Image (cartoon, rainbow, N blue to C red; front, side):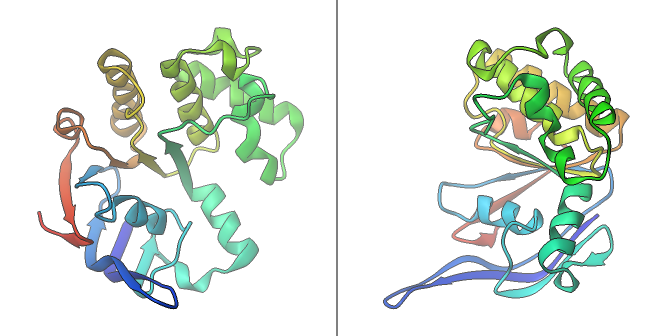
Length: 221
């Protein structure tokens, strides 16, 4: 589902060159739940951003669902990303002045579907994460765990084949973190969704299918 072939990422300024990723080759199978660990600054988020087509590699090739993403630019790239990928972030990134259901609808605004259909899809996504009774609430009225469940609903509303999660339990206590991971595992096992999760939590990583480790931009395990 995700193929990286000798991917590197180098950030260059006038005075310094920083290697964020160094020659990463990695395959993520369809329906796999992969976790990525490593110390801060080792390149985990950079790797996730390249998988999510939010950043481009300096060298190497990236394929998503069999498609070479170097063939996509501009609007075609945005359309491909919107249809194939769902994103979950540590800081939720909910829009404060939108209701829960309107937040979940946001990815659908870029598709040619009716307002009625958007509402129906958003409602189903909220049902899936157990928040059907919070549709009209606003983010400020939710707990951290509830906010992250809204973020998951937003990630799955468009029925993506791949979910990329950057520290999805990082801002939650252990109980709420377990609830969020249970939802991700359900999506992985019952919906056959491919999931890649960056985490600092060994306990969370141990519950996934496979773990890779990065150190100074290189894969070490």
